[in-house]
Image (cartoon, rainbow, N blue to C red; front, side):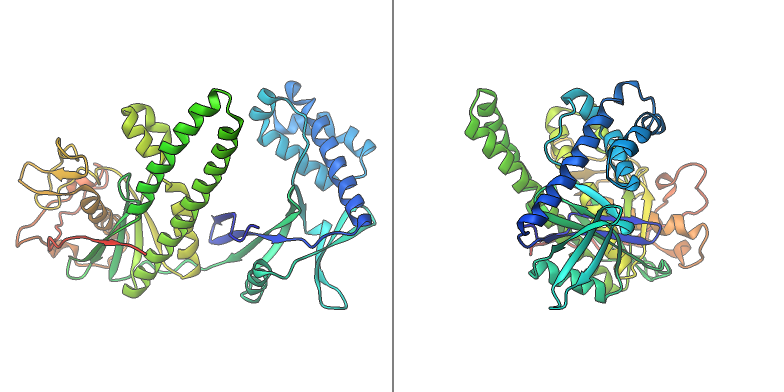
Length: 432
């Protein structure tokens, strides 16, 4: 039984969450109707796929299939269009693997379903599968339904659902949140890394001092490595023809996916709670095409990059920031791993004998993730200061020495010379 959110999206201040509800067993008549509905949708998918080789665009596919589908199918036009969109979206996998479908999920907009309650107050979804033809699907009142109800009470709304292939219903909730002000004294800088999911620095913009530094997610890295080793062994056996190994490999993939997703959400929530305790805004590097750069490194480094759940973690972070009215500022990743907070110079970024350490010509040796999280926090203040006069950055310093930050900024951004006071405290590793 699924009991977790399956997706989180943020679009222009609107947070979207998808929650899966469990159905009660259907009567024989309703089962026949649902099977008829599903089989017709599968037929539409198959017939749409036949036109893929001659369609140059999604619009072409529409013109090639829509008229015929409207004449031969009892499905509403909106649902036929959803089928066409799904086919076009997955066209690469379809053309390489064939186009015979046996299972599917059916997405419905608010024109074709209603959430209702029976006279006995039992929750149901009334599904219209053809003009003036409908049936109801009863919902199990379990923990997932309780969560569904709590979202409705909190003002979340939903305009579309999906009938899943495993007799469940996915409901897409959304809610708009106003963007909070960034003008706060404390900034929480996050560096996402391969040895620790998130290294965090709390930076005081008024005193220009590091207040606190923490590690989050060391256990994810360790568990990911274990999963990877186990999967390689099972894959080797599966390639030799072991059916049992192939089954165990699929189970292990799902187990790993669920573990990483759950821990990413937990860590994001823990960081949010830390930011709330300091009334801080959050800054994180804007990383693009992280896994697309894997070919630039050796095999060991590529594997480490591949195991970083950056996308999942960032989505959880964005969602929680929206809900708790915490500003999330994305900074340019330019030189954040190379800049020295002691002298302001640039270095390669890592100690030659230990990849996890940063070594500068000035003699500074420090954990590279710890240093990078500080650079992210400082850089967010620098970038914002160009348009917001919120701090006294022209007077910050480290060990009574001014440290230039020109190297943190691109040439067209340089306009400030500032410094950071770092207290060289040991970093805490957060376990929960």
